[in-house]
Image: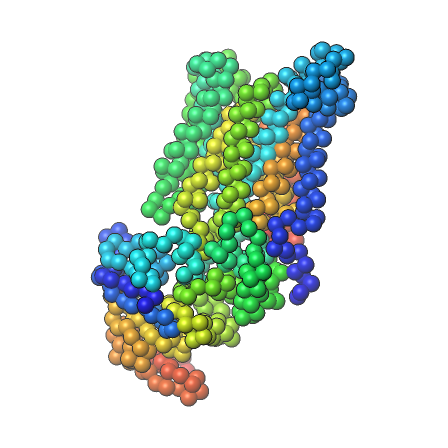
Length: 356
Length: 262
């Protein structure tokens, strides 16, 4: 069957895929500019572009004849939120790819190891105890520390002489998450009027995000993506089993630990600034896999861009289009869930049982 | 000498699998590891592939301690055809076989012309060229087994380790795979070490046999010397006879079956 092989190419990004990659990147940039113009005050995209350009290149005279309110709206209010949603979406989607390959499980997502439960517990604790140790960033920092403590507990529980097996990692994650969610329930029970704040945080939102928060998640995502790119080929081999990968020359124990820790750190950074946003990390890798194939070296950049685009669109929908702001985590689950059902059903009908 | 085991011991929890095992594996020979269930055959392979570390003793590969190799350099010396493996992601067959070249490729480089040629050659050699464009997840168990075998051949190593590699194969492909291994041993002076359940397959293709029982080497050496009725009966506890079979053209073993249907 030589004809069936036309799609094989030793080059990583051949023809069509390279075009799609550039298209996604262009689309994302366009979406950032368009979304910055949308909202309570509508701003033309050309004005948005000149405001962003003026800020980046420190050319104040470009926007000298503009209403002085507009740069504040775009640069201080909208852009941090937009970039936060895009980076979090991209980060969660890329982490989803890594976790699915690492845990040998198509149902894994960035929250499988209980990172989200840890972050939620940390945030809830900060809310209930009314902690403001670190000023307005207390919530973010507590969520981040909660996520780190959870990761440490899960790694400690699942470590064995042969490294970190996928089943023991998943099991440890489920146990720790179960304990933590009981802890969150207890905190809600203790809390009086702060219950609303806890519930709101758990639903996930990008409202009122600031530049330092964008900076935090951007740094973690950038370093994480570099690590993922470095280990992407090892990840391909490990997706076919640890022993197999080891006999092909992968230092599986080291690669597993490095990937696990870095993906968890990226997830922790994302969750701590956004709350719990489900389905992006599970759904996007599956959607992209049908487009880019199973090779993680392609899957990672595609997933990052697609995830960024998706969450940015969802957040813009709830911020600027819907009559009342719905928490974005609720929105992604409400739209993503049924869409996932549709994709899954279509695939089941085609009879590809384990193609996910 | 490819592998040299010196006083190697290993135990799972309390149960001691190996006690002070000495074994040599040389180049240009095809070794068959035989023994009843639980005799330590797979543990021996795991020790050779460094999936397990011996508690005592030393394993030398090319006169160098096994644990001084990096995973990468080890993968250029030794390829494993495993018995069981997970394949949950729809890579194409050609991509899976190309993964065998991982240890020969520096990071961030595309496979060179030579790598693609090696892949093409092993696809032909293992009769999997027709599957090259298919997704590995769509293949049958036996077809996957052949692909995993092709991947091990693509590693292009002087040592080949097979863990019941023919268990899922029909007789035609089982013989074909064994002929491939035997040819590499003969032409490239490779060292092949294979665990068998099928004693007759080992009798047909191996030059040397290692008989294991309860973690001890009962006998090791040339096929004709080790593969005797008394040795097999002692290890497997079934009356056995070894003879040259004219139709098979090689040594074959027959067993007394006891009660059987007529």
